[in-house]
Image: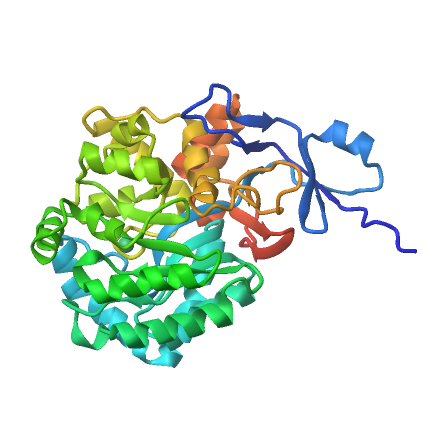
Length: 440
Ligand SMILES: [Zn+2]
């Protein structure tokens, strides 16, 4: 007879949002002297340390006081081949794609290059506390497979897919609908459901997909269970005008995707900066999530996101870094920029700390239809977490000396914590990133 695993009991202040703070008051759950009991990779209990200690005297306690436990961060929009084009400032979307992003994406034809970038990419996610991500793969099957391999080895929870396009990009990035169908089918068979990997059907955007290619997307979603879907929507006025020209039958940008059944509870569309009441209503009715990427929207001058209108219409919203149109991998920073840009947006939402935490964690889990598995610290979920502990002699350490309430502590973390403060990251209880050793 084997005795049950005693489990690990992590002791630190902890915060999570098991409920939606845009819909409910007091959605932030916090414990000043928190305990998180992990057993077989799952959260066996979360709450006050002493209560859990008494109920589980056999558990191995690990004292992490001095730092803070948050659910693993969830990035719902990020491009793997664009790691090296971060920082390409001074352009707008179509120009930036042409000059910065697409030439770099073409280099993914070289499989050894793709493997090297994939390693750096998954390391960048983990080192910023991201445990789950919905990732645009490459336009090349071997490079997309390299990402899946690296993601699988890293232990991260990654949904990704071959980026599908057959027109209007640089020609070396184009596939035919037939070759895309074949490559996607192979990748799905290889990687979908393997460990924590999921496949996401990924047309780049309507601009670069013919109707035949969009039909392939629909076919793939019909042929396989449990796939996710991701694309871009309404990012930039020139892009929107061009989509209108290419699809004269469509009443708006979203209608192009709707015609092919591309949307719904497991679909994430990035941006939706320039939107309409009709599109918001239809997104809400379908359950499609918008990945809001404030750093990218600002860096590319795409515009200010109408968060209030999305919330009022009942559209699901999560956060994405949009590397490399964005400004880095930090989801804490992304939440801060959502806050900052809402402060200056017309009818902006004054985001509070609970809402920022929700957007960076649980909202992303909901976007991927993974909220029963990750996104908060409720009992039974996978133990996906990030341990934040600022190095001594940093502004964040100084602020946290006097921050009192959970809201103040979280606001300080969102404002000041970079990857140097991400000390440990776990997925399903296993460490996927040890933070840097910094003397206190
Ligand atoms: Zn993007």
